[in-house]
Amino acid sequence: MRSKTEKALVVLSGGQDSTTCLFWALDRFGHDAVTSITFDYGQRHRIELECASNVAAAAGITNTCLPIDTFSALGGDALTDSGISVDGDTGQSTGLPNTFVPGRNLIFLTFAAAFAYRRDIAHIVAGVAQTDYSGYPDCREEAIQALQNSIRLGMQMQIQIHTPLMHLSKRETVELASELGVLESMALTHTCYKGARPPCGQCAACELRAKGFAEAGIDDPLLQANDVHS
Ligand SMILES: [Zn+2]
Image 1 (cartoon, rainbow, N blue to C red):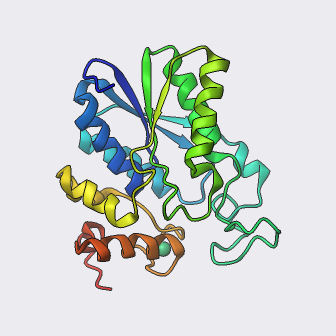
Image 2: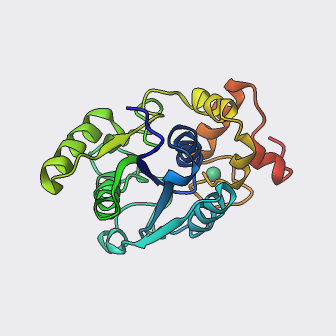
């Protein structure tokens, strides 16, 4: 399935995982074949959009930012609702963290497929992972595969959704970035749930990121760039 002539679209959030996926796609499909898409879904931390734009610029690719303002209207999650703390629980019986935005990945990938449809793009690359997946059910392989089938049927297109991080731990994701020679670009990424830059180092997202770099035995370039010592 490896092809240097087919086009690929990377769903780029500006985070560590999607940035690693972007460079994975450049390595696999070739520079001229890759573009990225970022969703402005009303996230509280606008810095994510800035990071996505910076990552794409550093990679020398075209990034398109699409607005989807429905999630914040739905409310109820800590990533779009400033009235909810990222540290609290949902008060619901789902057992999911309150940073879960229901259906977010499903919507993103569906819009990405619609974007790809008229542009002759056959491959979508997403940074979802079911290892260390923070409890988000739409990051699981089964959910992504079912969605891929739905898109193939519903849009009548042979789209392939690639999830190179699906079975990687955070440590292995850091190692992949290292193997691709793009660790430096991690300084451009954003992970912190609190939107802090330099990162807060305390939230679940910061802790997971720190754990990955620590286990890989690699210093996080983001912390070095901000001269933070943890
Ligand atoms: Zn944080």
